[in-house]
Length: 178
Image 1: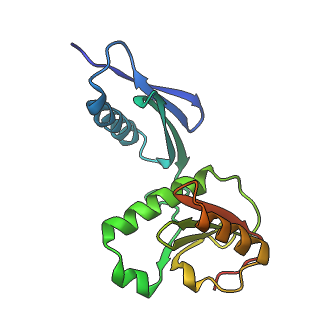
Image 2: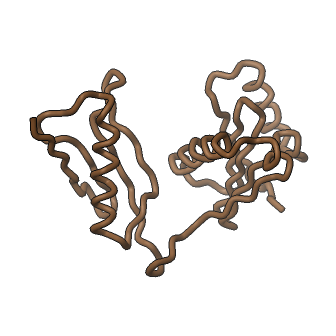
């Protein structure tokens, strides 16, 4: 059985990656999509991945939507530096921090840009704060968030008492990161 993946450029810097014809078993599909994307990026070194969304049907991986960005300067990628609170730096395993940041960035890129700071709170009480305007990102314990607006604090407490999602997201307009 011959496997063929296809890359369609739906719009500039928006790709659809899928199989043409036969598909491998479900457990092998992510490997083929990753390999196809790696090969595509190798042919387009001025681009890097901004966001990826899977296409699934009944839990079965069928394809990927990939959004790309052109690097502003050759060889230099635009980055959003992450500052990690010393307490979390010491107590969190690197793979747990990586997972937290992975999910937070996924939420960040899906979130419609607003004014202020976007806070992504995990059930474990870790907060990833994104400041688009200043291009900064902080990871802090929830206890370190002081002076939250009353409305934001009420929504956060409600979510903590009855979490319906693994992460709580709130836009903190006017909130300043130091």
